[in-house]
Image 1 (cartoon, rainbow, N blue to C red):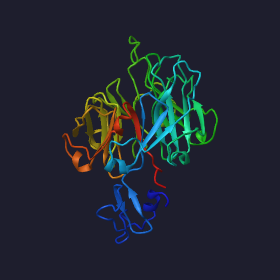
Image 2 (cartoon, rainbow, N blue to C red):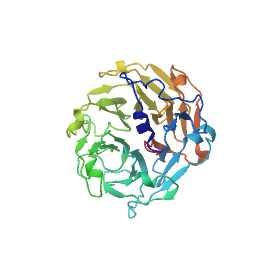
Image 3 (cartoon, helix red, strand yellow):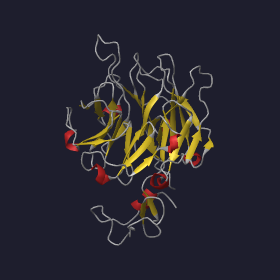
Image 4 (tube, rainbow, N blue to C red):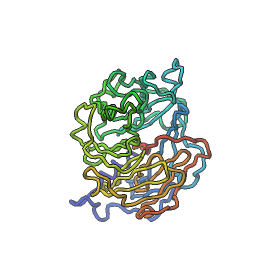
Length: 374
């Protein structure tokens, strides 16, 4: 039935960007069990969100997916899809497990690995690509290809914290900080990761290490990554209790002692995302999601949250789905909050809860696959 976003993009629009009157006829309620909106033939159904994929904290070699139907009707069911990957380093005395997952614009999945014994001599780790065609059913899957992180780039290479893609297909990732090496933010061009090989990052970014001359303990991290509409890259630095913005210009050139264009001293957060109008949302494992208004994050400082949402058990990562629902992930859950429920500070009741019936106990990262419904 084709890509849903492409279908909507082909609809007739007015000069102001709104849909031409009479072009579509959304139903008040979906005639299927999946949340979303139906449009007149041939435009069909726009799902509320694509498959929700998640992985655990260095616990296994699996990636898991849930459907919108599960979120609506069967929240305690086991994952809809479980992909089992081969060990990329079978000779490692400290076995590696999945650490992060991300999706290219074409729907290909990228998986990274790490282990709990992270030392300066343990690495570099691998990344693996799985083409979108391999993601449809539970299976043991063989990656299209894998390659190692750079071992001599002046940053940690023992594992990946987060993976984010620019609209042009360039892959950005952040590595896990060590006491002896900085967390790195690395760019791989789309062309360099299109086929098997040993690509080198086109850009390597890191904050200064050590942070001050008399402190040997590293205090900078890059826990999560998110691009804004202007091409700036936001990242959380839980070790320094900041959330930072690297400008689009700063992303063009290697700099292993970079000072972010915007530094927000707003406390310890491990997850970051932006909503459709540019407000910054940050997750803290102490039980809150905080929103900072777009107008308050234009320059460095310590802005006051515009909203604080209390979430039980403490979220580590957050993302929005297509309908504007906020999804918060903790160790054993993914909770969704409807837009109206997070319009003001409070402790809203989740509109959907995915617990997986106890199958997943240490969720680490999650992502919506941009090509799940094709």
